[in-house]
Amino acid sequence: MIFRKAEFMISAVKPQQYPEGIRPELAVSGRSNVGKSSLINKLVNRKALAKVGKTPGKTQMINFFNINDEWYLVDLPGYGYAKVPQETRMQWGKMMQTYFRLRENLKGVIQLVDIRHQPTDEDRLMMEMLKVNNIPVLVVATKADKIARGQRPKYLKIIAESFKMSDWKTIIPFSSEDATGLQELNQAMDDIIFP
Ligand code: GTP
Ligand code: MG
Image (cartoon, rainbow, N blue to C red):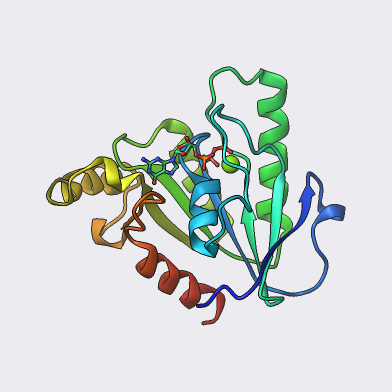
């Protein structure tokens, strides 16, 4: 798909704030600092549409971006940042549960993991949450530029195993730095949004 238009719509914490209407949407999920906002900027080819942070926990609300006046791309707040207080974690959990349960526009989630690291318990919980809500998932391994091409299958297999995926080849290695996987991701998103 071509990104003709990409603009920030709204930051939401509760359903009343979600954009109205029936446009389909895709959300980007993953640990704090995994590269969600960077991936969104790369996809839409804009330097700073989604805010990229040096400090983890930059994105704390559900951010909706209008794409081509046709669908929404959604930047979800990251999880797993150690310094976040328990109270904030609880709020995050409630906010996510509500979003996944109620949001009928949501057609799929792009679940990001760092290619270098084995998924955490929280990553697996997130995958579980998506599964019980019957939300299609696209697993993307970010920061692929950090691992030599020939070494990547080894890392992708570890991720697939941890997520109990039958085929590690369905994981898309991606880099916001050198655009690895950009075409594949774009195509896979297109297939979900416009089946
Ligand atoms: P939160 O909003 O805190 O949940 O983080 P995020 O998942 O949105 O991550 P963000 O895009 O802000 O990126 C975090 C850090 O990782 C930044 O310093 C980015 O420059 C870096 N980063 C993101 N993607 C890549 C990548 O593909 N390769 C490399 N080398 N660095 C990346
Ligand atoms: Mg972010």
